[in-house]
Length: 52
Image 1 (spheres, one colour):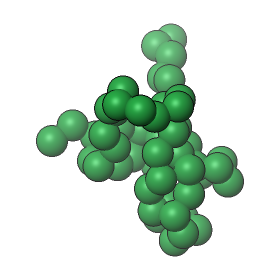
Image 2 (image 1 turned 30 degrees about the vertical axis):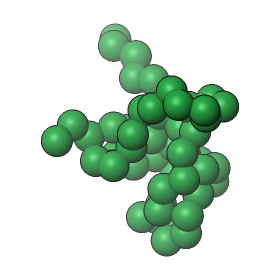
Image 3 (image 1 turned 180 degrees about the vertical axis):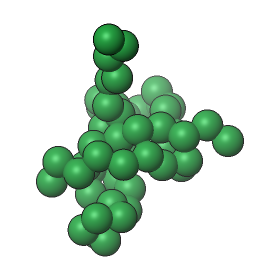
């Protein structure tokens, strides 16, 4: 299972295995996931990692 690095609405960065990237009737890349730092459902978006 592929893991995705995401950032929640509070700015916490974490990885999750359950981040479906579906294009069906959704606006934008955000999804609701449970943040392990604040333990609440938060809107999260994928983090774009840059290679150095």
